[in-house]
Length: 253
Image 1: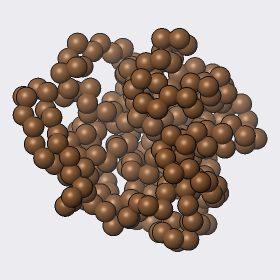
Image 2 (image 1 turned 90 degrees about the vertical axis):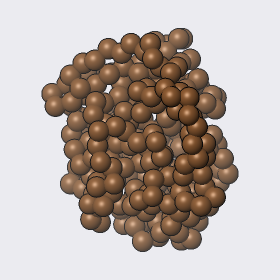
Image 3 (image 1 turned 90 degrees about the horizontal axis):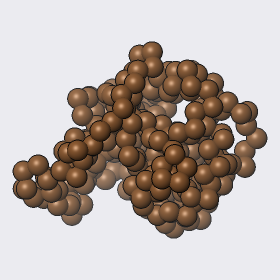
Image 4 (image 1 turned 45 degrees about the vertical axis):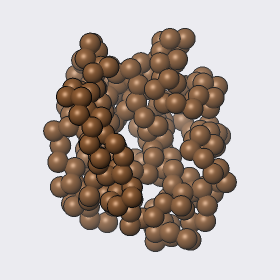
């Protein structure tokens, strides 16, 4: 089962940025009521490391990588990896426009009915076995009409707004999965949803509101893994249990 990855990147990103200095935010811990100023990114974070980690984890797998480049690929580190992806250059200027153009590119490709589509932002790390575990989900559930996230979002465990959240937990071969109300802008879908949900996916700006709407009007669910298969590299929101700094440091490519 082939996975098509659509990796969104843009030139304004400083690939050396590690979240220090002025790039900070206020983190509100709803469980304690305390607020602290924290870096947006973990100290070990680097955009190029995220991309190299992805290349490591898809090596030898049935995966096709598409780089959706908002700008000139020659102006940043991506110019060193052009043998690893199919390049699609866009002019977006905003996250929503970039996402919409990416969805249109994915929808326009000639693909088989059982192929998968992974919309991926440029600030995620992955564990080594994510491809196999994702294929398991869709092989066990052919024609799955739901969304699959690789990210066990930490907010579901720490925010007071989720204290009454009830999830259904299932197991497919080597991975537990839970139902979750929403996810971020990185997720996997089958080909049928690529067409059927185009209207909603390209018209809503907020990820959380979009997935709630999809659930309300089309009964779409979101599945996320326990433990996580990836993490969004945001301080205090890294997926729990896994030492992501160690995974980042093991990147070889």
